[in-house]
Structures are given as structure tokens and as C-alpha cells.
Amino acid sequence: MSRRTPAELVGAEPGPAHTIEFDGRPVPALPGQTIAAALWADGVLAWRTTRTGGRPRGAFCGIGVCFDCLATVNGEPNRRTCLVPAEPGDTVTTQEGHGRADLAV
Amino acid sequence: MPTSPSDRYDLAVVGAGPGGLAAAVTAADHGLTVALVDAGPRPGGQFYRHPAPALGAARPERLHHGWSVFAALTARLRAHTAHHRITHLAGHHVWTAERADGWRLHATTGPGPDDAAVVEAAAVLLATGAYERQLPFPGWTLPGVVTAGGAQAMLKSSLVLPGRRIVLAGSGPLLLAAASSLVTAGAEVPAIVEAADYLGYARGLPVLLGNPAKLAEGAGHGATLLRHGVRLLRGSAVTEAHGTDRVTAVTVARLDRRWRPVPGTERRIACDAVAVGHGLVPQIELATELGAATRATPDGTAALAVDGEQRTSVDGLWAAGETCGVGGADLAVAEGVLAAYAVAGRPAPAGVRRRRDRRRAFAELMAAAHRPGPDWTGWLTPETEVCRCEEVPVRAVREAVAELGARDARSVKLLTRAGMGWCQGRMCGPAVACLAGDGKVGADSRPLACPVPLGQLARRTGPDAD
Image (cartoon, rainbow over all chains, first blue to last red; front, top):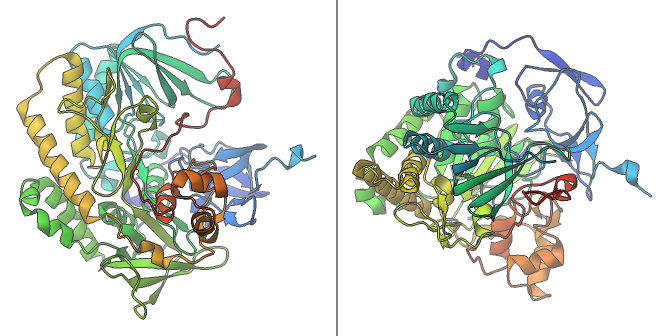
């Protein structure tokens, strides 16, 4: 049995895909998808490293409660990517620690 | 300056899920002016979360149970909105409610200093829903381990899956619903690992017989899972997730009656994602900060205590749905309707009251059946992270308890930082309470219900602002 996709299940006919940039490479996104969703669809599960252990993290709760999915979006750190819609041309970078290395003294 | 309320509403409903929607449209039916204040971009809450219009989903109901109820509620919402009886404020995260000749709700709508709003109303109804309860296990911070509700939310809203071969684990009916959605959408689910034995339901036979719709819902998920060959492993738990930078397999073990893993029963299941959860925790901080009374539910969470008309112990503050104890969408709808009648000062239909009572009895039975066993901590290792935000391991929490004398979650937080991070203890709180030994069911204190930009907090708000 060939397995169907979520889009086929709900008969989705989205507009044309656009592109966001993740750590310097293009990632396709469908209109209406969040940044976290576009990354999942591309097989990416981690886009943050933790402050203490430097361990990889990505989306966990998917509804904006856990803050594990934080990333730097268009230069602004600590954005909850499970809530933020992906806009054409968005630049997403893996957030290292608190994402404020520029403020270090 | 923050948006000033041009009008004072008769009722402000916080949350546009099933309970909030039902309350808003029912109150508007009875002539009340209503503000429906919701964090989401579209109505529906978590249960009726659905794709953004731009995704062009022709059949969103394929990912839902009871979609017709939602379609009817949103049709009524549109009609009331068109006639200005309901103002739907989407994308508004309410962070506090204060008394002000009635109520004043403060909401944030974005990161900028001007992205703030104030809503004034004579009465407030909280329908803020719930979030998932998590019990940590070794490897649960690996990418690819997600919450069961999160996997479902990302699927419902953005039509994506975390992997191709997904193990469901934890306890509670959400696991069945999520697995059912995931396999229907093309994922492979090698197993649903359920810690409870489901025998708890048998003790409530009369309650079950009084809720044929809930049984049919369960049977519907069961039939889907059977058709896709999904195994339900009862009385078992995922005791470890394996992998280095992402999950590649889990270890599953049998549990004894107290949920302690039975040595020698471990087996390994390959997967590329794990979706976990142990039921839901009512999201009630807006009310508890106002001093609203809570009650302990049979699954060990704190819910708002309400009377037969859905009144909380705080005058002028009402609650419906999961905030009163987790019980599902149709209970939330019934409670929302009852609350709206009460706010409008009208007698509620007896049928709605009976439905609420039946569904509430089912919810209590369900909660008791999935209450975590006391020895679940037996699957933790000293290095298992308990607090995901602050990266606090079990070892540190146990030291705080055994050597530094911490007896409750609050003391553990002060000594270890567990629960002090971004999520404010929503992910680790239940586990820390168990490890601290009191396991006490109490409402967490969170003066701000969600993060608020400092620029907004710094502004003076309200009529006395310059």
C-alpha cells in the first residue's frame, strides 16, 4: 500500500511554494506553514543548541508552550518557530545558546 | 500607546477553542456584547486547529473528529461578528486580568512596544484550555522526540510530520487520537505504548454506558488503528530514547502496577520520531493569580473549581472546558453554553446540563484510569534531564531533596533552577513535584501568563495613562 501524504489526505491545493533560508541553504515552504513546519518537511528536526550543554533542540510541544523551538529569524533571536509563519525570504539561523552572543562583554 | 478599549463589553471570553466559541456565540445569541480574545490566528483552539487558508485544504475534516460541530460554531461566529455582537480578537495573548469596575484584560499581540491591547468587560469567561503533561525519560530531549499533541498540532495546522515511523508513548486517550491522525496522514506507527492498563475504565461501567458518543469516538480510533496494524502495548512505557543528534530507536519495558519498569522485559523498537504525553494540564494561571479556588483532579492535576453554573470562586469570573478539568471538546462546548446562559442571567436547557454532567463523570473516570503510577521515576537515570530549559538533571534535583532538604517543587526550583526557564515549569513541573516527594497537586504561580516584551510592561496602561 503506498502511503499518502498529509496534503493528499485533506485535498490541499496550496499556492506555489516559496523559499526561506536555513543556515545558508534554501528550504522550501508552503504558504501558511510555520517556520518549524517548513523545517520538518525538509527533514530538519533541530535548529537550536542549548545554553549549557550545546545540545541540539527543535520543536517539542508545537503549540508555543515549551520554547524548545527557538531560533534566530531575520536576525532576531528567541523566536518561537512553531508559531511564526514562514514568509518568503526569511532567514533562519540555528540559535546558539541564548542567541545574544553579540551582547557578550 | 496601547489600544484603548472603545467599548466595554458585557463579556470577554479568553480562548476560542470549543468551550470559548460555544460560550461566545451563545452569549451573543442572548444579546450580550462579546469580545472573543484568542492567542491563535484562527478560531478552533488546539482541538479544532486547522490549516491556514493559504494551504488550500479542501477537506480539513479528514484530520478531525466532530468537525461539523466546529463548522456550525464558526458559522454562528461569522454571523455575530458581521453584526458586531462579537469582536474576535485573534493573535491576542492575554497575560493578566485585573479588576477595574468589572475586568481589564491585558494582551500582547507582538514583539514591539505598541503591540499591546486592553479589553474591558463586565464579566470574564476563561476557556484557555490545557497543555500536555510530560514525564521525562532518558533521551527525551533528543530531536525527533515531540509531544503527542504537538505532532498532531503541526499536522493539523501545517500538514507536516516529524518523521515516517513514529512511536506514540505515555498515557491517555490523546495517544489514540494522535496515532489515528498520524497513520491516516501517511506515517507508520509501529506501536502505541500506553502506561495504564485500561482496566480502570471497567470500574466505571455505568458512566461508560451513559456516554455512548465517547465510546463511539474511541471505537472509531480503534478501527483506524486496527486497519493500519498499529499495536497497542498496554502497561508499558518508553524507558529510553536512543540516538546521538536525533532519535533512532526506543526501549520499551513492561511496567508493574506502580509503573516501575520490570527488569528483563525491555525490547527495542526502531523509529525516527517519538510522540509523548501523559494527559493534559489545565491552563489556569490567569484565574489562580486572582485567587480562584482549584480542585485536585483524579489524574493529579489542578483544575478550577466551579459551581453548577460554571462560576469560579472569584465574583464575575467564569470558566469552561479543560480549565475545569480535562474532558474533551464536547464537554467544553456544554460548559461554554451553560456559562453563557448563566452570564446572561437565563436558565440553561436541562439537556445541556445533563450532557455536561455525563461528560464530566466520564472525564473523571478517564483521569483516574491514566493517573501516573507512583514509581514511574524508576525509569529515570541520574543524568536524565528533568528541566529542558535549564538543563537540570535528575541528580541535581535528588541532591536538592536528599542533601539540601527541599520538600517541594518551589524549593527545588530555588536550589537547582528547575522550572525557572522559558516555559516556566510547564514541561518539568509535574516531574519535579514527584521527585521533590510531596507530589502535591497545586496550581503553579505565574504572575504573567505568557512572555511579555519589557517595552510593553514598561508602559502605563489603562484610563489613567498619560
